[in-house]
Structures are given as structure tokens and as C-alpha cells.
Image (cartoon, rainbow, N blue to C red; front, side, top):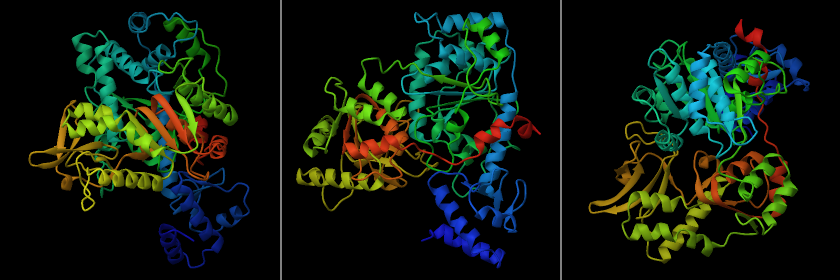
Length: 569
């Protein structure tokens, strides 16, 4: 049965063209469904309906003014997505084509200062990324947890500031408030580890903000405050957690960059893609390739002799770096080894690892023990009852998080916890709010400065209950519960919502049956939220099916970026 959106579009298309064939209307429904699960387009190359599309006046060729676009590769788009993809590809190609030639002597000195020689024989990919950032105006850095993305980018920004003949304006942003707060905290820690002069210190960004706030995107606005005609006033933009940024938001971001700006994307290409349509980071970092002249230059300034990478030359050649060495998960880490096996699609090997007692930091249990789950949260509840420091409450909360694949599981677990709280007298059955209730914001509120993904903790104050959220300056802000925008209780969260977070221990509750939304990237994302312990609750059969399922998102972005001459025309 068509969704409400699909039904409305079908009604609209029939008004625009009463002779529209039913085959096209069925494809509209299918395209809506594809968009809702993250695909940008619908491939029709091998389908008979393709010929019928060409004769319909509601379907245009690339660049036509029509509600539907059928491109050269027989991919069907809604016009908005086609224009977003095309404009994004063109702007990225323009950024990638820009390069500069820093003073090699000064560059070598700075690189030697911030990236001392490694005792291993492996090329220092962090040093490689920093060197490329001084040469390229577009840089995509992909790496898993613990590979040093934040440390690398701070050294990289310091390097750019040191080499620039004038002070640079730099900004950092992330797609959610939670990710921005975590980025800001990581940056504060990284800054303390670097020896920098005052001039460089003053140029480095002090805070991170949400991408929506950076662009001036607010609900109900037809376009952001910053766009091609009113670009951002900056020289360098760093976007963290780029895997979470959808096609349209990324297109708006690059459109708002001034011509001289550098764009640096950080993320993990193996993580879950954005909730909305698109898999931009995955498309951009699908392959890495360095031109021969770039390899020669790197050998001179970095003392790294790299063999030519596989893959063909595209406009993104020299713009992609993979950080592969994890400083968090060593050779004895079950979490790190499990993540690697899951990423490789080695379902049986990953299952054996979970079942092997020799790996003390990972395990598989047939079901979750409700009492054990409650005990894991005791430190949190003791601090709530003792009116503990907010930073201690936050730390205790992050000691354990239950992740789930489906939103219904979140609701069920929240209800289970709250029934226990009622039995213990810690919550009234007649009230939603109580001391200790953790909540996650699900709707941006620019007036309050609360954003999707922010997590707050309900505490008792003399004048009533207040919900405390960490502030950008390391402090806390408290709000009356009734002032909050849309929010959810968060004793558990979906794996999608967990992106940008880390917890000491993570439990993953599998659904009873495997479905289309349970796949390798989701499992990998859940594993890599854990720092010290990862547990799976569910059947081995569902686990195996999930690892064997590789996610796929239909998009033409990677193909467009391969057509250099076409894009730059």
C-alpha cells in the first residue's frame, strides 16, 4: 500500500498529466520507498519500464525542468535529489581541483615537529593526511575509532595556520549537537597536548557547532542563511561524523563555502550512513588513489615512499586518506578484532570470537538478564539519590548503554526500566517526570540551544525538577522539563542515535528475526561505540544473517565524481 507521501505525489502527477501511465505511478511509489530507506535514486537499467519513462512528459533528462529525472545510467530521481547530487559533485570536483604549493622546507620542519618518526615501518597515515591538507582544498579522512582523527585534524589545522601568510578563519561542525559536543571536548583535550605559539592558538577553533547552526538552517526556512550568494566567512571548515550527513545537507554545505575555502571531512566510511537519503562519505572514500607526481612530492616532504594505490584516477585522487591503525584497540582487543571481522563480512569467524572465552571483552548471550542490566546502572542511581555532581552523573550514565536495531525495542526497554522504578518507589506511576530520568532531544530548538541527539539528566532542585545538559564551555545548563523540545527517555537507544557517542560498556539487543535494517554496518557501528566491553544479546542465527547482509545505497555520486571532464564543464 502506498505511503501518504506516495499517494499525494500520485494524485499530483495525475493532475499534471491525466495520461500518465500506471507503470510510472508504481515507480513513483517505489522511488518514495527507496528514498525512505536511504537510496537517492532507483536503478532502472535492467527493467522494462525504462522505455515507458522516456515517452512521459513528467520525466526529464539531466538538466530538464521536470519532477522526475532519468539520467544517462537509467537512474530515476526526484528532481530535487538529482540537482543536489549534481551540484554537490560539481562543487566537490572544483574543490578537489584547487591545490597550493606550500614552502617545502617549512612544511618539513612543521611535520617533523608534530609528527615525530614512528618506530614502526608502516607509513604514518596521520602525517600523510596533514601534508595533503596543505596541498589540497578537499580532504576526506576516514578511520575507525581510536585511529586518531581528532588529533590528526588539530595538528593539521595548526600546520595550516603556521604555513599561512595571513591569519585563517577556521570552523568545526558536526551533524548533531551530541557529535558537536563530543568533537569540542576532543579538541580541548588535543589542544593541551600540542605546543603552539600564541598566533597559531588564536587561529584554531575554540568550539564546534551543529551544521544546521553553522549554515543558519531553521525549521520552515526555504533555504539556509548561508548559501552560494551569501557564503560562510571562513577559510577552513572541518566536518566531523561526516557519515551522518545526508546528500541534501552536504550539498547545502559545499554551496555555502567561499571559493578559497578548504573542506576537511572526518568520519568512518564503514559506519552507518545518514538516516536521510545518501551515503556521501561512503561514496567519497570508496577508493584512494594518489597521482605519481603527488607520490613523488610526499616522498620529498614526508619521507614516505608509497606504492601507487589501486583504482583509477578520478577528480578525488590525492584527496582521500584512510587511517587504519587503531590506538584504542590493540592486538589483544576482542572489540577491535570483532569490528575487523564484521567489517570483512566474516560472519562465522566473528561468531566464534564472541563465543570464545579467551576474549574477555566480548561475548554473546542468548538473552538479556534484566537484573544484571539493572545492576549495571546502580552507580548512576546512587549519584542521583545523593545529588551528585553532574559530571559524575554523566560519567556513570556513560558506563553502560543498551543499543537496539529497532525503535520499538527502545520503547519496550524504557517501559521495563520505569516499571522497576515504580516498584522501588523511585517514580510515580501518575507522572512522566522523576529525578534520574535521562532524555535525548529529538528536535532542534535554536532558542534554547538544544539539538537533536543532546542527552540531559533530570535532577531534583529546591524549586523542582530540572533537566541538565552539558554546555559548550564545559559547564551545564538546566531547564524546567516543560520547556524542552521533543524528547525521548533514553535507557536504550537505536544504533543510529548512538553515532557520535562512546560508552564504557555496550550491549546490543538483537531483534527476534533479522530484517532489512539489520546489516553489517549497523553491527559494526554498535561494536565501535564500546571502549571496554561489548555484549550481544540474541540468537547466533540472527547475528550471522546480519553480518552476511552488506548494506547498499543507490546513488550516482561516485560515478559523477569519476567523470572529471563532465563535472568541470
